[in-house]
Image (cartoon, rainbow over all chains, first blue to last red; front, side, top):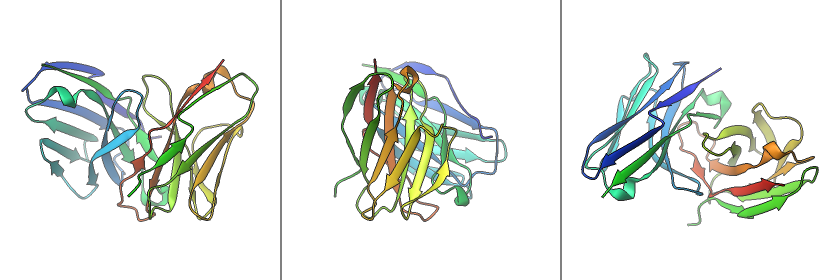
Length: 114
Length: 113
């Protein structure tokens, strides 16, 4: 069974800092990995999707890396802003025949202080 | 282009009752998945529908059932509600093709009294 762990559970940083969120998974036979952002009481907003054959993806100030062999992914946020405050979730997809069954971590709650 | 829409946004029920939640997928998407998210936890996969059939199921009892309609919209039904069913229920849609991202709705907040 795939287990996904996110460390730390919560993080508080001053505005402008660069930061890294970590995601680890127990089974390296994944199809892809997706990072999401969730604002309080809201649904999930997709940030980045990394295919199993890729090493990283970038979107604006966000960069996600994937090391499948070690079962790790990181989400790097550059020059953090108060608007980045949210919970960040990673989810791994086991394989294509599981369609869209994702295994989620419990998230990292980020607070960026002005 | 409307994204994933869910209704209702909030719902309060009592133990033993039954509830139906609804989801309209993003335009062009044919696959719908349902997730349960307890407070402070990540979403847990309930099941997935494609071509009006349940294709995958997570570790949830038979009290949880669903349906997908020809227009790809979907319903989640929960019978004999328990206090532990209180959660945010999320619907996600995507294209069947394996490398496509999921898109989520804002969820239905279900409270059981």
